[in-house]
Picture 1 (cartoon, one colour):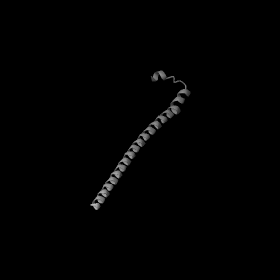
Picture 2: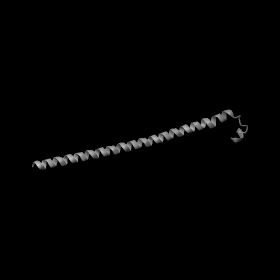
Picture 3: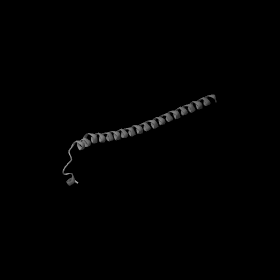
Picture 4: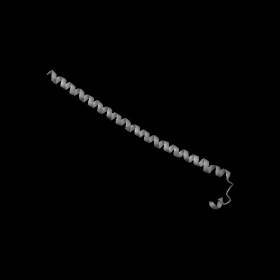
Length: 80
């Protein structure tokens, strides 16, 4: 009887350890997937910010100074 109890407790202990290991692996996968999502969102936001920045830089460098410094176009009415 004593040997049977020891083997049962040992198998129960092994099952518990296996369950704990599975839970840890599951938690690790959840963490990595949420981290991956955060990184993807971060990439999208940084790309968006970069595009906005480039847009305003191009406006600043190309459009506004030329409009301010160029003389008025005499054919402006005919363009419209």
